[in-house]
Image (cartoon, rainbow, N blue to C red):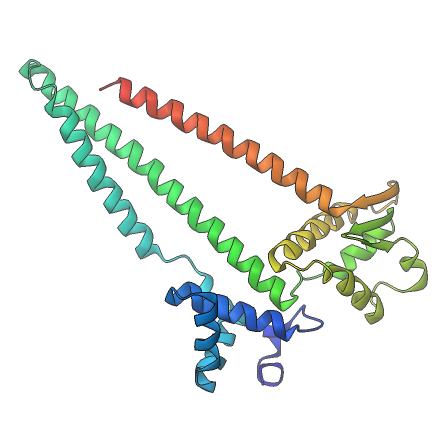
Length: 266
């Protein structure tokens, strides 16, 4: 039905895997209603056709993947209230100080509240963004959706190296000698290799890594670069994840150091 009435929702999708789509719909019900996996499947099978269509429409359209600003506002207000109570308690322990120092204490307290509240708001926003991208990758992976121009970038990448290794399969450089860039058979071959990665969100990470690699190779218009080996895409993803974790640890230490400096001013 969607392929006939709204074909744009199925752009960049060669083949649909119905089993993964059903699992993704059940996972969305479990997340939204707080159900177990078994109960969410039962709820999905018990839904009216119009409700099933609406759920699938939301997954295809991405309407249910937006960050709700109200949630952020409520979280921020709650954190600010808790911080205010904590700081009031702390300030109560220094009541024996002179009256002349009270305006300075109040000024510092307001400054600290604003600083820590801003930090808490940023952390909440980052958490929501990570959840957003995780859900988006799960949905796109279940739908076998790829970025625009993905297969063209894979073709260009294969012209610059011996091949790409994805799991136990290899996309060989010889494919560029047997098929053209726009050939449908080439896209099906690439899609088949990518779908051998069983986890939807991890498969989507693999696709994103190949897409970025292809974007870099497309800048080599003079064909000066040729990597005389088979590149393991999973190693690229693993290295990128390690760099991300190192960056998060560094940010955590910076935030902790800033918090210690703020508390020392009390």
